[in-house]
Length: 219
Image 1: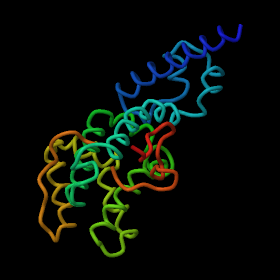
Image 2: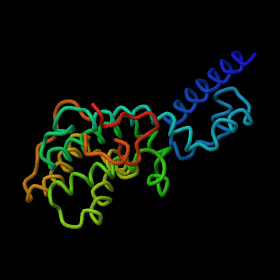
Image 3: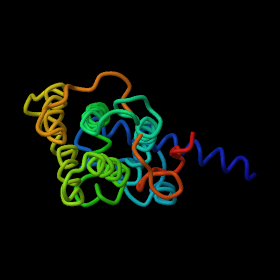
Image 4: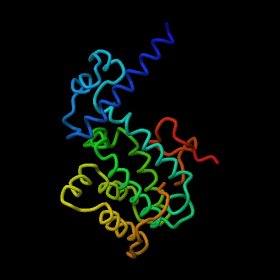
């Protein structure tokens, strides 16, 4: 009996995530409701609410795997995103990886990490810790005052607005690379090429904001 209940729960989860992914991709993710998802998944609202408290939690579940993969690269990837490259190059590579993430999964990020939710849901704490480490390594004055400003261009609303205006991902990467280049005394760094995705780490070998199951710095 217990095995069958677990199998039913797994099937329902798959239905919910599949239905939600389709709805998020089809229109404005911010307009999707729990009733929409339950209807598209063919399950009752009670069943849906037992597993997910709101639409944000469903979008976050869909986004988790993509963000976890990026975290793995940040911790253990080859330079320039991984350890071993100068801070401006690593920041440029981080920007490039995030632009790719937003370009591919922007509808999910929009559903999970907009407004105030951006700072409490998802991996924002991880990205912030990574950039903060790079600022400190570069000897940037008052990095705590600057770090959130450097992450602001990666807000999903900003990125999707740029794309709606016809700004290509390559242009966004190049512009952010010039911003990252200010860490090197104003000299811009070219767009990162190669595997996207290791900063210094926080307590227990992970960065603050790391997703459950994300890799540690060991190894």
